[in-house]
Length: 426
Ligand code: IMP
Image 1: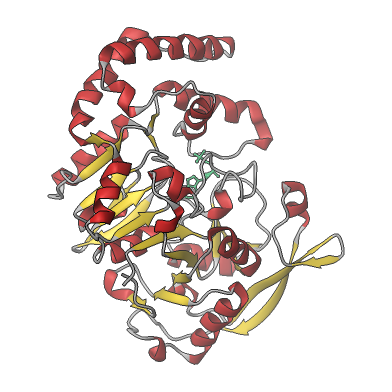
Image 2: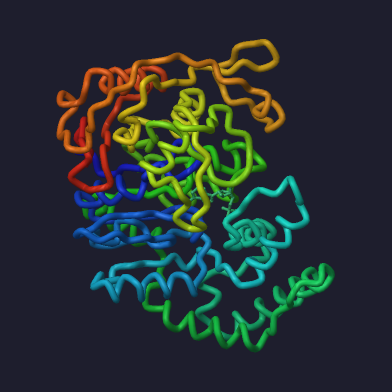
């Protein structure tokens, strides 16, 4: 029986990973996140209520333990706010574990995020302005502050002082507000105290869990097209949403990964800037945006809409080693006469079936489409593949063929009950 499943986004994020993770978490003992921070936004419907989470894994509602791994960047203020929000709604947070090796987002990271976007002008990334990039930059420059460092006030004070001095010099040079060391030290030491009961060596905890035969769900945030290595660089996030990052972002070996489920939207969306070959505007885009509630969970920005792009999802299948796909939001496509699927790109007169490495080339890619008849029936009530209209079945099968990975799940609405399992996981 499968003991570990990774859930990754296969497009530009917002594929509905929260829903699928929440669904699979019902059968998992532990849910662990391996990258990103409060740039993510998951919407989960639980007991008739809608929850919006950013930092805490979606499995918080049912798993026996949820882990925020070392590969994440953690804003302590947001973490505590999110915990308080869950507690107010009657959801316990006692089972949360935070890696002592995760890096901490400070207010200067957020300020620098905004400054960098400003300096980039029309080349801006369109970040969520949560300080994600600058925090990861400090990590890789070996200048960052980790959760564990905050636990000892003396060590913390020493590193924070150095950091604030350097950041203040940069911010002052650009006429931006600077930060007071004592104030930040007091504030963040208080946060550290509040967080300390949850802080631990999460790699050790996972190892113990494996030894006792627990089932673990690894939850990715964002999507592979936003991956710092495999996405549409530089219009990407600063971590690796790809499945490989499970190993480094949680301190588990690659041999521990069994199933990798790629969450796929039945169409495509993107927030922020950057090339998007299958982007559409007009009535079909507006219809999909409204029915699919395609507005950012974190920033509320309307998402850009496009047809399903199999070149993108094949790319993700390859770089994340997908063993199955979960097709979400299929119901949103009901009522469209003709659906288009992108099967290749035309780049400078040549047909290609891969995502080019540079954004300049990607911007020149023109989608090659195949058309399929749509369906007009509402499908939000179906509970099996056989109940789907034939056109919808054909659409799913074609996606499966084009991507090269079997359908493990499809989803026809936001509720847990609107999730149809085609392959037993866990
Ligand atoms: P950052 O992660 O805030 O640095 O933003 C970098 C890019 O990733 C921007 O285009 C964001 O819109 C995008 N992004 C970050 N997190 C998410 C997410 O959870 N869903 C969709 N897009 C995201």
